[in-house]
Length: 221
Image (tube, rainbow, N blue to C red; front, side):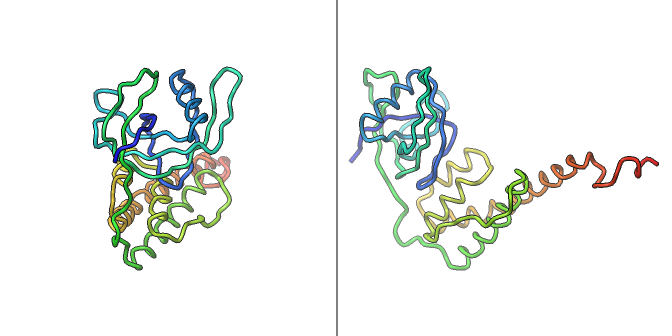
């Protein structure tokens, strides 16, 4: 059975159980936020369409639950949402509202699709290496990532943390098989970690002006 939900087409992918900060500035989405706060504090985030702003039925999104709202004097708001259930868009309603409203059907991963223990261990190992490189890129203190134990939640947590294209994340969101999602992450992470390490080497070299830590007068004297 389909349910009605305000929709926010956005080029950012929200995953279940993960936070996402948003800046709400367009008048129509200010109205949507006000209506959501007066109701159940939920709206849907889904990818924009290729032609129209709303995608075609069948698009996959995630329910956003407003956790923090910081209104500004000029009507804009900074909010933090947390991902709830995933959904499939089943239709778009023609309502007298400035924002989009859709019909959606919730779904979850198929039962019995848990990963092999070896895949879980490998995923944690690969993400640990990737996360360490990202921390160094932002000059943050090294620390272990706080990862959930549940395989499904773990896969969403890691997918949300990846610095990669929205299309890649969208495919991970739409996957209904936990083991397949985890294997996809295992295939993705080595390349992303290599890119992060390459960026880290450039970052470190820039900090030494390309001298490798030696004084310029030693190199030129």
